[in-house]
Length: 294
Image (cartoon, rainbow, N blue to C red):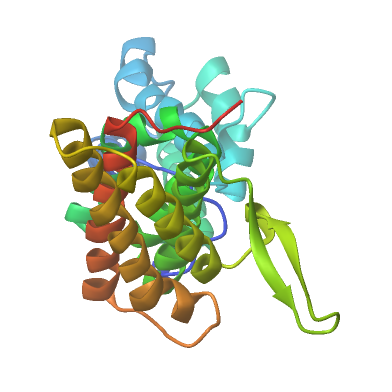
């Protein structure tokens, strides 16, 4: 038995591998106990109902749970409720030799199925991130519900050590925050110079580039703050808007421009650094009451 282990994945499926280990252990223990009966003079005698419940049913029931969950097809055919041989034998009664043989074939079926199944191992600290994802990001995806799928994909990719993909989705998360910040300041469109026509046109922020959007944000904030007299109100706006816009620009220059144009492949440390920059920005927007409009 040598199931392959890949770092790639198509659909995120969680499985408690301890159940599989317990199933194999349950079969081995039952086979060891009944071996003297199955190979001795009692081999053709019926197994008493109490012994069936003790040494047959546990493996059967656990296999019925595990097999369909991870698509152990041969195993499932032997135990399924609709007429699997092991299920029928346990239900209708069987001899000691038959019980031993059924357990042996069941284990062989499991081992055969596992040879054609791929599993992913997630490092403990990454698994912890998966378990705590909702608690860690709830405030952000409540304020920006459109960002939830990208947050989930980012955490999944990070947990599975697909770091470049994690950075990509993280940039998508920040884009939702950037758009909301624009709308918070009344910016729906940004001026773009069109070379072909030689004219300037207003382009919606959803179809614009970050450089032009950030430039418009700075201009808008500067005008907004310049109108205010010195005091706590002005100070609070300066302390919020100036750092958050600068942080967004830093992320743009450090990660977004490169990952969106396929210029970089990121490692664990770089992806971790990107998360440590983007998450505080999103939380700062949340704390300010900035959220998706509509």
